[in-house]
Image (cartoon, rainbow, N blue to C red; front, side, top):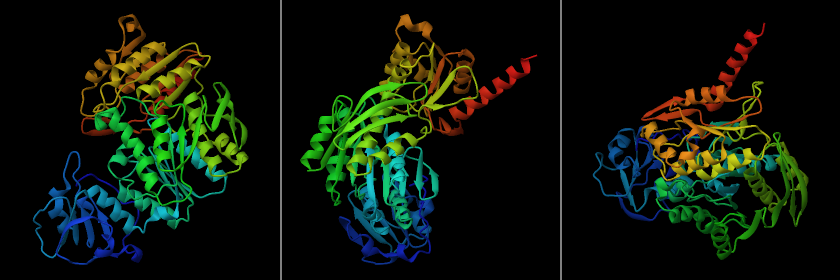
Length: 521
């Protein structure tokens, strides 16, 4: 299948990653195998272009393509065996052909076997939910490092493996890349892996063989990923599977489920954990085992008190907004459950810097504040604007759009939220993909009542929208640039172009500063 994955682990020439086929497939539910050959397998790939001599090729039926179309190419590149879901003639003889029901499940099992089940040797914490996953993993990493542990991180922004930092291609990698990354962490003698677990990865069996020690639920929002899951029930079911399947089936001891008790869907996650006799730790502002009190926010950060049976903490953090308070509570709950000293938990939280693309400030000395944020869902945009309303700014200016080829139902809802909570909005493009930007914007506008028509402007070109937003901002204003956050690209049709809201904003502000300096007599 031509889907351009990356084999992060260098397996070529490593004896520990050469395995007899029968040993490699020992855990598979094989429907049929012909012939009964047992060659040495030196690597695995599900991209025919990356197959090398001695590899096993796994044919996966994707959403846009089918790996079975590339079996001949895989054989030409030296595949010794293939995994298929349907009988097919092979161009070469004496090639082991193994038929299974689900190639994705097979890939996960094969990858775990090939890399010697690396998650057995790590403490693995999975974080799932609509919003907050990235921030929670960064906070967990900060706490664990403060406590002296060697930690890896896998998520939306980056993969951190020892001293290596790898740009993330997906929130949760495919099982082959994931097991390779875990194997590298084991070689680095790491103690923990904290990882974001997306709903896509759960339904696509990418974490099938990961042995989780803990799972964290942040929140669940409507109208997110329904372009993929179609119904809210399916989206919820995908998230629940981290608890009721993957964590429940993990052979690890002392497993924990950490759950946001304030979320409307909390009861489903509590039930999933308790039925499977997993220890539950809850957190929230309304209740829970770990609670926050006396929350105060400023332009510089937030302060609050955390109460728990393990003790109390007074926290000051640079991470602003009540949504970040919940993220902090999730991380603190894990630290407490893990028995980490409370002072180290506090130091880890307070030492955490701004998360890339999450309320990230761009400051070039301008008389107004600029924050770049990843908010691209209805709930995230609402939280962002409610947070902004807590701060003492004269006006809240917002630049946002909606991504193409994603659930269209959230578009008018985001328009409605922008009109209600921002003083002025500029609606623009945000990764339109195969759709026309103008069509996406018109659907956003449907949510804006006539009485609010003077509160926004349409500027289709995102660069021009940012320029106009900056030009409109005055002393005492807050300019929010939402939707792309940490992203460094823009997806237009079949083209991906470099585009970073933060770099562009900085460039515009710096040029504006130079022009003002030249204007001073």
